[in-house]
Length: 502
Image 1 (cartoon, rainbow, N blue to C red):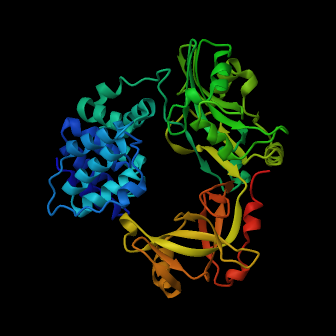
Image 2: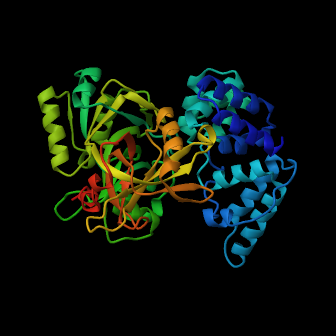
Image 3: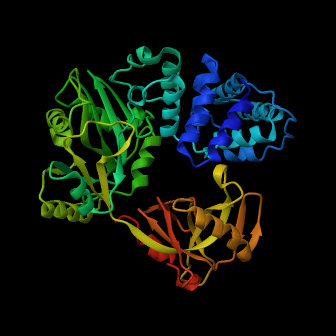
């Protein structure tokens, strides 16, 4: 198959809001793929190369000036082979060879293909084929029920691998996927609750209320003395966390799969900033010790617990790691649950998780049986610019550059970007209004005079070297614009820094 067909399908998926239309477009393409093309194509359409990290950054790609080809000629396998070679380059001469290889790829690519490759390799491919939609498309293309495809994906941890099994072997091949100690499974996800009262009303009395820690999600696998530890994205970090390995090796069991959080603590016992925990994942050693807090047990000494209710999994967790459980209370009264939320916030954590004790482990899905109740902040920031959108947002000003007011009277200080929370109405308004406040522009961004104030909801801030203010917003979302305010009314950089943990 020509690579251009992948690009065209990506564009078609990005141009529609209909979930059904997205699935049908993807399924039509999947049915036409040769067996060896399934894995790379599924990975690309889900937003990343199957090789994950390839060592080629944004600057290398965007600085390259190569005239596009007039007509498509690249095949799916030719592109995959080039990306495979890029991912394997290292050592002396690798920088030059990487540039040569990217140049060869771009010279053979049309303008549309070049754009797709840049966005694919820089993580900016937002064509709407999210993992959930792609999973449904695989089931549709294979003519299978969605449940066994989702379960196989959960157990394989890799959607391209699942797609190959579904499209080539059907139910028989999918049934071969089982929970295997040492192979990570997709983590179960939580949905945000409007508030604690809403979560309690929806889930009833048969619940567990747990601390929602601002740590890094980990999945721990142990088989005898062998321990492997994975992040939320299923990246292995075992060599970077020797203290966790030693701790897991000492647990009173022979084999186990645990789900939890890990974080660095200050001497006071309060959590250190999130990025300090994350810094440990990129180094072999570190002065900060990580502490694990487990909240689920998926497997214990030969018994697969995925389909068991949370109550049974917590019993197994108590047997496997009694001294390392996340703080929790089972079947609390509404008053006790409220007290637990207050205690979690007082101790420096994000809030609480409210979980149904009757629910199985629905890996890879964001369901309502786990709900997170967090403290939310809102601040007023200045719009410094906006980037032109991709996919369905092509032709619209989308991703906002956000700045806080300098209390000393200097220009606004950039603290982050976001495109979250922007409705079609807001996108249309921005695209019409922002050029009226334009100070300059380049190919990607329209920069504005500091005149427009927007109200932003966020989960918090963290220390960052990326922005001049030394902080960055976490999970920022647009609530509304504030025409009643001008830049003098925006929050200051001191207010933003005041949201740092501790």
